[in-house]
Image 1 (tube, rainbow, N blue to C red):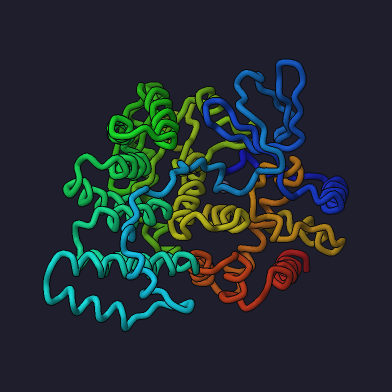
Image 2 (image 1 turned 30 degrees about the vertical axis):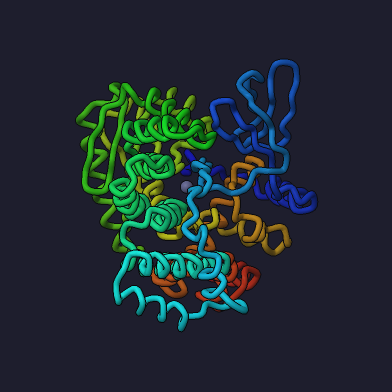
Amino acid sequence: MRIARIESPMKRVLISVLASLLLAGAAAAGDTIVLKSGRRISATHVVEEGDRVYYDTPAGRLSLRRDLVEKIERGSSAWTPEGRDDLSVAPPRSDPAEGYDDIVAATVRNGSIDRGYIAKLEMEAAAGGAPAGRRVAVAHHAAAQFELRRGSTEQAINHYRRALTYAPEHVGILLSVAYMHLNRSEYTPALEYLERARRSEPQNADVAKLLGWALYGLNRIEQAVQEWKRALRLRPDADVEQALAKALRDEEAESEFREGETRHFNLRYHGGATPQLAREILRALEQHFSAIEGELRYTPPEPIGVILYTEQAFANITRVPGWVNAVNDGRIRVPVQGLTSVTRDLSQTLQHELVHSFIHQKTNGRAPVWLHEGVAQYVEGMRAGGQAHILVSAYDQKVSLPLGLMEAQFLNLPGEVAGYAYVWSLGVVEYIVAANGMGDIERLLDRIRAESSTEAAVRSTLRMDYAQLEAEAVRYLRRTYLQ
Ligand SMILES: [Zn+2]
């Protein structure tokens, strides 16, 4: 998310707000308003009064008609990348291990995987016969589930790949590995496995359900709708009903949109934006894409969806506060009303949001907000210099926001503090790059994908914990801008 302009709050006011915030522990979880449309809004101080629901955002106090609200979840607002509302779909029902309890028990024993046992089964399978192949597949499935419980997705996927060399058409295995890819937003490989499963069992409801998810992730909404309708014909399923309703809303909201496509982008825009502007935007996006690709040494495997809105439609659909001038909730959503060409500001907005897409795909959606926003601002060319004095005095007066509290959405912070949080994130990232170059950011993102927490990834990449990183960032800011 990029803010229209970072407020430069009066230092004295900011410091006192920060102090009271830390005292109250108010940077912790806020509430979530769940709308009947399925949309979720993070907010603080949510109050129901008469036929309206009032809530605070950094843009001030807003309200909604109460009949639009499904429910309010108190203290529930957790970080989802820029308010991304992912589909929550239960795992497929078919269990590849069903009826093979003995193999499962022999594969995972005394808290580890018996590789000798798997090797023995593999030899039997190599000697021939589909039943032997099936037994190996079950053993690898048991091993994969064991790795998953230990948090090692990579190892689990490897077991499934191996299983498929012995039982290439095993629908249970194909569904399991596809499900893991879907959870990591890796839609293209998921789609390949699911198409194989479809050839084996055309009437399998789980295959249709997960195919819909993969297609939705790839922004092929119409096809996703077809698959989910098919899944419901095969078997009633509450998950699918919800997903289908959401896809139909998207389809309707976007039905008047035109499309443009390039190698890395899938652009949709309302008739109001000229085709000429859409083409220019795609060209700008492709340029930014190669620049960021070089900088982060990473190429997102999935195409990136971009939607252009007239300003009014943007506010209605994204429901974000007025200070937000673009959103990335899995797709980049940008208002373009009144524009006829790509201005410098629009170009920077596109670049900023694109960085979020890269980081999201590179870390499987696990990067904390401070790093997301710090890197996005850094890459678009912003520096903390002009506001270094605020960051340093907040730190000296022991009221600076700890990075641990900036892992979740800034939308929950009071207005002045949200602006401060953006600059502070930028200052920390600027320090990391100044100390060791962009390579450290790249390695940090890779570690976040693998480690249990961001702070653990910071420790293994930068050899310091959050408190030391904050101290070093302030030292850097003082030395660079205030002396
Ligand atoms: Zn942002």
